[in-house]
Image 1 (spheres, helix red, strand yellow):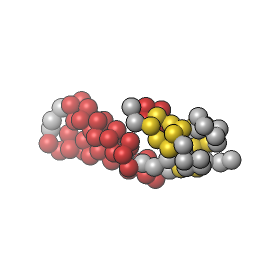
Image 2 (cartoon, rainbow, N blue to C red):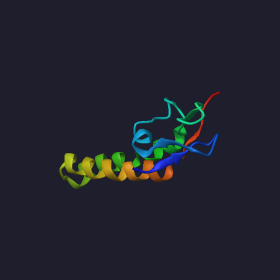
Image 3 (cartoon, rainbow, N blue to C red):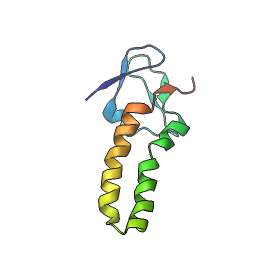
Image 4 (cartoon, rainbow, N blue to C red):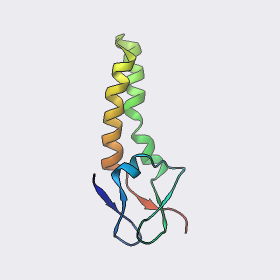
Length: 91
């Protein structure tokens, strides 16, 4: 499990598992400094694009929606963990 650094203290303050459950409306406290960190709203939505593409393609190409969503779920997870940054939230 990869460890992610806090934008405040630049220490390891969040695991990738913990980040995967973090949404733009929620924030968590850094394990080291205790300040709130989260993810930006717009970039978190970008990670949802493969889900929308899978739904649209399943209706156009007439393939199994569940199979398409399963593949899109894994692609979204990879996009979320790699390209959605951790940012400072609040105080």
